Length: 391
Ligand SMILES: Cc1cc2nc3c(=O)[nH]c(=O)nc-3n(C[C@H](O)[C@H](O)[C@H](O)COP(=O)(O)OP(=O)(O)OC[C@H]3O[C@@H](n4cnc5c(N)ncnc54)[C@H](O)[C@@H]3O)c2cc1C
Image (tube, rainbow, N blue to C red):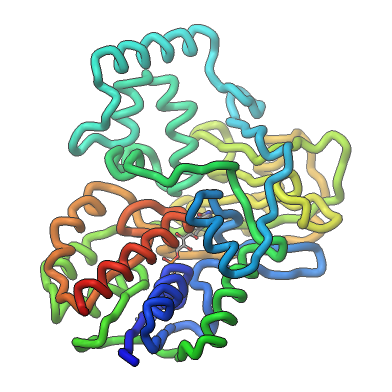
């Protein structure tokens, strides 16, 4: 049997290992940490389930196929999850624009559509693109908070071409396995072990040699030295990719009848709240235990040396709700450098990918979209191309 190798056992690496095994290879996975999953990890605490990074998949045809092949039942979101809020003028709003701003938005969008100006221009940031086609109010009250909520940086640091590039079509919003995101990782890992995929944990790859087909599924910083001997200009481009860090703080409270129900609230900058957003976990999925569970999300750029997590959550929550409820339990997770900054440099990478030798391929969120559904699709196409090239 031909051998293949995967570096990194996050969801990208595990999915690549699965696809290589399906293609008939004997696969070895090398992982620097002591467990599979990378960023994705679910804690089963006495207070309820805590997600340390992703809390859901976007439900696409690809996600559905992976759930089916792993015999996992998708937990659909609760109806209340359809309600999303943006904080403006001291309260959460489902539509944050005034009537005048809404009229301006519609007029600008129609004009941009009529004059075929709806595509992002080369080098245009998300902030500039949204201001151009939808106006300053939409940029301030929609694009700014939404981009910070998903990408953890301001909209003027993101490339509109990258962010509004092709994305998978969702058929029914977010889903998660009933046991949390960790269940997907555990099931995938178990099935790989059953199929004789060999795992080496606590093992940091530092050099790769051909011709064994290899998928590097680490972040861009760790991929650069592995790629350098074989594709130096790609390694330079990988090193230029900036990353940003996040802190997620899951806090549990006694539930109250007047608790706001919904997916969560996004906080534009300058509204008196440090968090980028908050997820109301108990209104999204019904497996979050007896307490009210909320995940507050902070940029590590903002909170470097600021107040401890419980004080920050209590202060931000008081601005949101006007109340100081007792925090029953709190679980903070810091992820420095967790996410790439999706700016021009992500687009520049594609110019160098052809420099890779036929036996070597990259997979990971810095190559395009952030979402794990896209990462599953990327692993499939990456492995198919690698197998074809190295045949
Ligand atoms: C707070 C937060 C919330 C998120 N929420 C969502 C969400 O709700 N939905 C969604 O779709 N996405 C979400 N994301 C994004 C998603 O979690 C990530 O895009 C995805 O998990 C990245 O997976 P990966 O396998 O590509 O990388 P990683 O998970 O970073 O895995 C890379 C692996 O490579 C290993 N490694 C690194 N260097 C080496 C080396 N030299 N040798 C061996 N191993 C090495 C690392 O230890 C790691 O295990 C979120 C991200 C964060 C941070």
